[in-house]
Length: 193
Image (cartoon, rainbow, N blue to C red):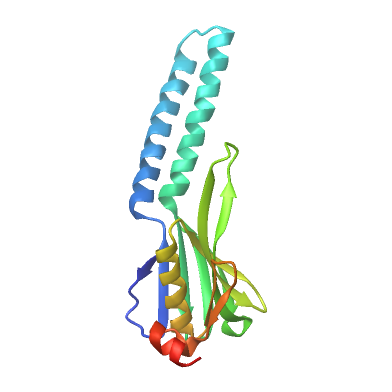
């Protein structure tokens, strides 16, 4: 997620979507629509045999699938707003003019969890993800990163801003750092023990 400047010291905001993902989505959308249009035109104008119609229909469905997938990549945005004044966390999804949001009170959460997940796809390839979530009486999944350092910085920035503890569950044992110790150097942390 990319941080958004808000000009309000009591609001921390992030946006996901746009940039390279949007450009790739536009490419998928454009190519899907062009291929779908060409196949649809060929189906309507040409005198195809049943076999050729079946093949063109499958191609048309694949092209429409690419167009829909590209539209989702290009046009869907998620935002996360943490508001200290209202004491709320707002997660919002936008698709063109449609908005959907969920608001959560600060009191539901007491720490930011930063963890590590390893998933295996159907080919047996492993992918490591680093998700960040708000935890406490409720759980709110925020986002996940493919690299550890950006995920750690994201989770730490939210924990500092909101005054929550940070729980690092990337190792064999979880490490909890309270909100007041997040800015301390390693030397300061060790001297406090």
